[in-house]
Image (tube, rainbow, N blue to C red; front, side, top):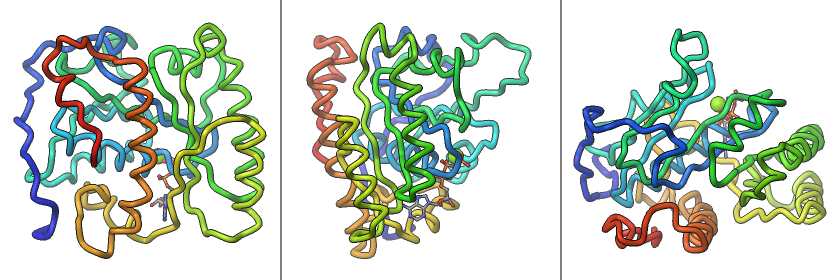
Length: 261
Ligand SMILES: Nc1ncnc2c1ncn2[C@@H]1O[C@H](COP(=O)(O)OP(=O)(O)OP(=O)(O)O)[C@@H](O)[C@H]1O
Ligand SMILES: [Mg+2]
């Protein structure tokens, strides 16, 4: 950890600050979802959270998956790295959904790690409450078929039909030059859904998960290729935010919204 990037330490935010329903936040809310388990939702959510936290704005990671993989990751996160607030959603808790789905008022980026197998009204609620959707997809025929079905369902949710929200696919664990990768590209082109980046199959992701880190937290040569993979996704995000600022232009925080990572 001694070789982690030297970073601008974010002022630790306390949960004493007002908590707002996520619908009321002046934030960009990103839903990371796929109906199928194991596609890379947690890897994508945690790594994205660490990239965004490095920008110095309040970043919240919502762990909506009962498995708790994102909250475990957040607990391991070293204190010298940019702070990420993690909120665990507990479906068994005796509190209302709207009480649980709250985040600090200063939140600028909110990333939700969704559970697998979402469908029907609960899928619609999730889509409704977020601004952007990221779907990680593994390049195997079985995963492509399952993801195609899921994306079809996602596009048909009432929330999506009311207001089409930007959606992008992130091809995960890609080994270039394989038939499965070619098939995945064809599938995405046929859906006319952007796939701004691919994440290569890399043991770095497996290793750093248990340390509460993302590839954004390391600048050694061993992470250079993985870090590179994220640049196009961050640019895609920046383009979406530029088109629709999720926080008021007179908010000073919006002026520091510099996506150059
Ligand atoms: N790009 C990658 N390279 C290597 N391993 C990866 C990569 N992405 C994910 N993995 C590994 O694959 C496994 C599944 O990934 P992850 O937990 O992110 O998927 P998930 O969609 O969140 O799964 P679940 O549905 O169980 O929550 C993990 O062990 C993770 O470390
Ligand atoms: Mg997960």
